[in-house]
Length: 582
Image 1 (cartoon, rainbow, N blue to C red):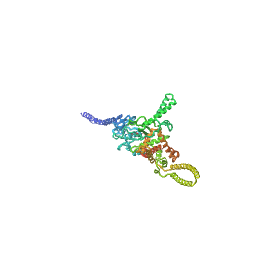
Image 2: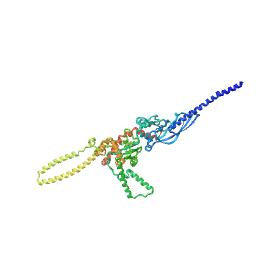
Image 3: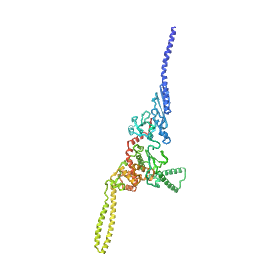
């Protein structure tokens, strides 16, 4: 009986003590399994809400969830084809840290995946997207973001050591739009975070994209320059200046590739004449339309005339501008890109994508035009310039000679009156012959003296005080107004817009101004003007005036185009072609 009681007692111990202990041993596993499954479910819900196609795997024993989330390379949507997505924010922004880039709509391309092991939902991080830095900045500028000068300065100085959270761009009301993000998932690249709201967008499809400017049509039309054959065929290396000529060249090459025989020479002449007429017709048709110009880091890359019926940008049928592109051998193209950049600078916008060369800034800020030359050319009055040369006393000498001759003439007539008629006639004949000889000799000596005086005055004019480009531009603007080339109310910048419109549209007009601008460099290199330069200006004062207002605008905008913001942004974009956005 005692043994039975002992056996029952042992089984009770196993039942009432051993089983609960075994259950308690399994509870952590059950708890980890439940928690892991709940966390995994929450993570999957987060991925679905963020429109991410992630793969999750759970390790219930170690309470670890492995997540594989795709990584993307992104690019802004097309401005025209994807209008709704481009100008609006995403309908499903990511709620996962690192996914700030999903605030906006992008074109995406899968470039890999990132695997992470987490235990809690707040440890999940979305892989940062890779984006071209200039595309990102251009997109935000197009939406209406404003660069933060101090942020770009710090980024340029500190690089990857820039403090997290430092602003690079803000909304128009000061909201944080683009800032420095932690480097956790950047693989050594610059890491940025983006924030944007649809209420911050201040631009639309009708606004020009960043790095584009609109040249308004001139109120007063420029003088018409006929499209001469040598201009259609090209200048400066033989490049053509008409878009139709470019099409004709492409057509001829296509015919050669198809094995067609070249057309007779006479027909080529007829086609050349037809091309000249077509170029002139195109120039006349576009002379009353605005022209939209795209400025890249290389200079002018595209020019599109504004159609009469279209207000949406961009527009078809770009103009032929190969002869206007900036290069080391085309100083005119460099001047044009610099003037377009300076023209596009305003109090709210800095067209910083093209960096104006230091040489152009130096030329545009240096006083190179002597005021005496302007007076000799009749551009300014002598009362507007300081005393710079020998005064012209030829008029005073002529009056003195006339008075002296009058006195002598009276005395000679008095003496002749006392002579007999025959002697008087003889004396008069001799006097008239003597006076003719004296007049001839005086004319020759006066002409020689006049030439010497003009040569001396020109040399003195070359040495006269040089005026700053801004002052020169004001006087040239007054000269253009006096000859009704620009309205009376026009400013130097408005006159520059008219000149740029003519340069882009008319190859002859562009060539004339580029010739003057090339002289600008020579004047700096040669420490002044030469007689040949003066003769060139005298032969075409109008082109000199237009060139002067271009230089004046570059001079006035020199601080902006060379300012810290433009320089810092350009340098940052150069250092980081691609960044991680999260």
